Image 1 (cartoon, rainbow, N blue to C red):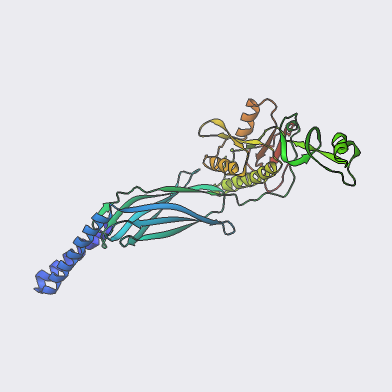
Image 2 (cartoon, rainbow, N blue to C red):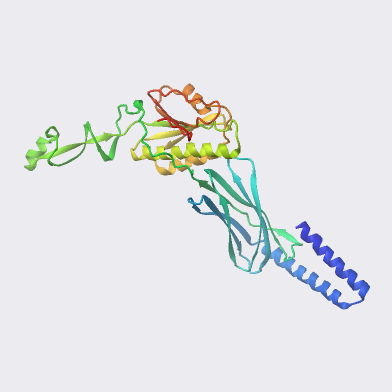
Length: 363
């Protein structure tokens, strides 16, 4: 804005000097025309500034190319055109202090709605927030401006991990398969204390499962199928001690591997109807955070919370905090052994240790 005003004043001064020394009416007419355009543009900008609204929305992400796109919608609800709408689009990683700023310049006719798409590369998992600030409406020359009266909005997008994890089956914690009163509604099992359904006899069925009383009534062999017990809730621990050294890209790679493995593990547990809590130590709040997971939407909520935390420099902070607070609770522990000082903890009967480092994995 300051640059435009300086150039504008220099042009006016040049035209004025040309008029004074050359005694020509051409520069005088140019001065009048320039001032007239500026005045008309300023009036339009003043009126339109009361009806200009800037909204930030998210667009679908291209996960194959690892790109996300924000859509900034500029709408002029006034009958007066807005010559130029200026605003700054800020993009911030929730786990980092730095921001990316982009200056956007767009014009909007009366009752016009324009969309500006701003792509961002997304090589690693992150929660990126976007917001439009410093919204001003100015004349075509960018000399006189007025702040927009409408409030702008912000938006955030969750970038899922690029690392998809290795195809493997995870060992079930031994203390998880305890006695329970919860049974699956869609899966058959072998718990003879609970009947899942009764059906007609088929070749190969165990004779011990025949429902004799019902068979005598229906004059046909009927077989009992038993229920599948749903295991008690367990914990999935995500290590936040991933940043004692190395560049930001190395830290992001570690977090991406841990979260990618977590998504695979969480999906496997949900398919098995296993309820669990996602837990990790919050360096900012200095406490253990816990997020119950009962459906796939809860996984995204846990990812968003993890990616909003600044990673710790203390080794195995989540693990040590969990051990000090728990009393033999079954858990899966996800960490990255490539972090200096993070020696793999010993796997116990109620604890499954999963190393997400690229060189080796522990199941």
